[in-house]
Image (tube, rainbow over all chains, first blue to last red; front, top):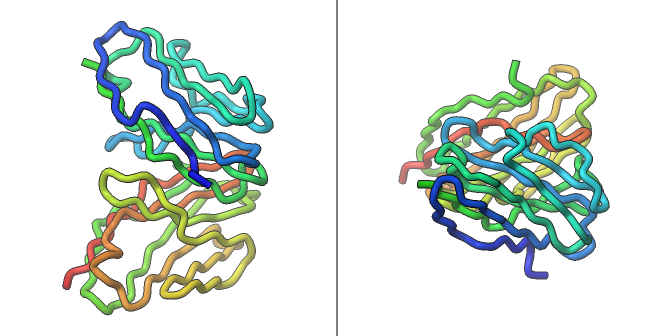
Amino acid sequence: DAGVIQSPRHEVTEMGQEVTLRCKPISGHNSLFWYRQTMMRGLELLIYFNNNVPIDDSGMPEDRFSAKMPNASFSTLKIQPSEPRDSAVYFCASSQGGPSTEAFFGQGTRLTVV
Amino acid sequence: QKEVEQNSGPLSVPEGAIASLNCTYSDRGSQSFFWYRQYSGKSPELIMSIYSNGDKEDGRFTAQLNKASQYVSLLIRDSQPSDSATYLCAVGKDDMRFGAGTRLTVKP
């Protein structure tokens, strides 16, 4: 198994532009998590899906952020419009048995908004 | 009160010593507990999971859980320089929340 796959690995964009981050979870996993990591705030849960359905999006910072999971093998996190304070590493993770079971992380996307 | 709290460190131990990392959590209904290791510039890597009170050993690592005290710890025996990393405590219930992490340095 290739593990959780995220793309792109690095993204540099200008303020105001739309950014789309992508994630392919481990095959057979039914929960998917999006996290954001910064030095100041650590690892923050943005949203998680169970069986492709968004369960808790209370961590999404504001309406500029949206996430979708159209099928069991693909999810996107979109920021529109992007702002410099969105600069962070965004991780996707997946687990097999729901939100309280072992989660495995992708390599992350380092986003820089200038 | 933060949901998951860890000593931010940094924690420094000599090679061969025991490193002790601590974590407390606020939700008494939490069901599952995890330790992740994160090297600089890398993603978190799961190293231990524990679901019931007591100790769980895996090689040089021992996780300890005390639900009554809402406390989980990680002991690393015979610490090696390669153990130098940030260790993240995670607690699962309706979702999975992470502590801020403890940076560990093992000095040769």
